[in-house]
Amino acid sequence: MPGTIIPPVPHYEPAPATQEDLEFADLAIIDISKAKTPEGRQELAPLVRDSMRTYGFLYIVNHGLTQAENDRMSDIADIPLSHVSDEEKANFMGKMREQGVYRGYKPRQFWTIANGVRDQIESYNMHRRIFNQQHPKALQPFLPELRAFAEHNHYNVLHPILRLLALGLELPEETFVKLHNFDAEGETYLRFMKYFPRTEEDESKTKNVWMKGHTDIGTISLVWCQPVTALQIMSPDGKWRYVKQIPNAIIANVGDSMEWLSGGYYKATIHRVFQPPADQRGYCRLGLLYFASGDDEVRIVPMKDSPVLKRVGITRKFADEDAPTMGEWRRARTKVYGIPELLQRKDNVIEEQIVNGLVVKHYN
Image (cartoon, rainbow, N blue to C red):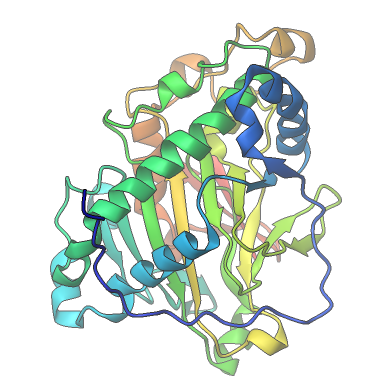
């Protein structure tokens, strides 16, 4: 049988790793290859449970892709952002404001950060099935690889983490997996995201914040590590700390929907993107992300059958009868994100929005 011929792709040259002395969050590293056996899952479950209860973040290694495969995907990720004309991009603009759906492009200067400064982030968002939306011509030769990459994230990374989170609540392993079907209605999506350097004036006006502190909308976010150190999380002691970029690792974090499904047991941690350290300024930051959400019709209510929750109690954001579905919550959050007119300043740090009756906080 002849070998599969993959199309050539222009190489994206990433920034060199920082050499600055930074304060990093102390996050657990999970060898996800161990999750293939019942014994391995029993070993990993307490580590994942404790990590997602305290930091809400952890690293995943041994996920099944090599560094070379990761590098190629980074090359492909830059195609829709750097090798498509503005005229063609205009045909694929997302409907975030109109429909609350992340598909297609989010242009730069779409969100407001602070003091009238708009973001310098461009992203291209793909539904996980890849082939069920139109794509720019330059990206089309790579669609089979993108579909394989989405499936890898979903089945080989997301599902094992969901099983471990279920075990942490002493629930059947497939409890959360059954809510995340690859072919169901829902907006789990693959995102390529590029942060561009900003002017010193914009840095001053925003106090070096590139994306405000926030929690994610969905259940689990998977962020593939890249060299530019800019992601920070709010640690349990209330201090911002950088997340170290480990080559060929994945950063996984809990979102709002998983916190609510777990009755507050797992933590949707506040995180932000901050100006990179001095030796990485002037470089772009190219990210590969897989944002998971449950099937659209799943109502976000706590797993009351969990023996753990029966022991420790449930923290609710909504009364069960008022809880939104995954689809309702995602659309509501997406439509209003980054609109300053909808924000009310709580103090010098926190801004608040009311979304579906729930107070959503943003941290500067």
